[in-house]
Length: 416
Image (cartoon, rainbow, N blue to C red; front, side, top):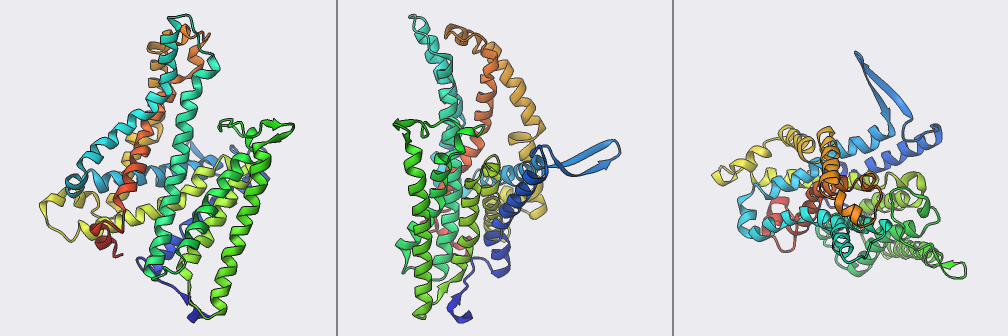
């Protein structure tokens, strides 16, 4: 049987199993922690597993700390920094992608424009006696944050596809390209469809009402149609793919074991994350944490192979930023607290948000017929969306800097 399983590695067996394939195990660890908390604490979010006291200071190991904070501070925000270090401080990237790098900063304005547009529209229509309803004013924020979440998930899935393709490339596995393509994409996106059409979706906090559960004919809704179809399609896809792998074994073909092991950990994780309301509030860290670990590894590997062996003065800055793992981690944490997450950023959102609400949009809100516009915390939404521009910039740049088939530098420094 061992001769029937072909293991090909991108870096080497140890690093692949730890950082590329095994990174999904952190997501599974989160699933276990969340499940335990939901069955042992009356208040799932606030229940404490344990605590650590240092003098008069006590740290409670709540679900928020163990899952959300640990992921956001230690892995997610620093991985956004990794893209900036890999692009903005590399003279080669500026020579090849000057306009794309500059244009990426425009993404910081997408959220504020989308969120504030209904208010400026209300300001204009109010002059002519047309008043927009209060409920309608939030449509810009709903549209932006829905777009933001979907692009974030697409970004994660595309990276997984990149690694899946690299394992195919390493094993010279091109005979099942179409089957692999459909299997991968359907097992990644069908759980999302099942999530938004599931019976528990309308009861979730923080997710917009998409109208899929509203009756269209009698008691029949779009969700009544899509959910069972999606569930059956997911099962059908799994059965077809497993049957084909079994067929390959029976005829004596070698299986691309690295590719299969990769999907064995990732595909079920995404299904579980979207399948139950107890995981719904933690979908982002569950499906993203493995992606974060993979990304740190690929960026650091690329940087070490490109910058450290060279004494070229043009690499002086990136060579310093990626000098060693400790330097890389410290800079990532500094970026986190200064620009993206952490107490300082939370304070900035609150203060700037209240200032914007009172000084800029109060009059607009009143002209639109809103009785108490400060309760909307519009300014906080605008500030948060502007800070999220770092993530949007990361999604965009990441989509153009890792094109293995077209970029000779990527092929060289990742040895693919």
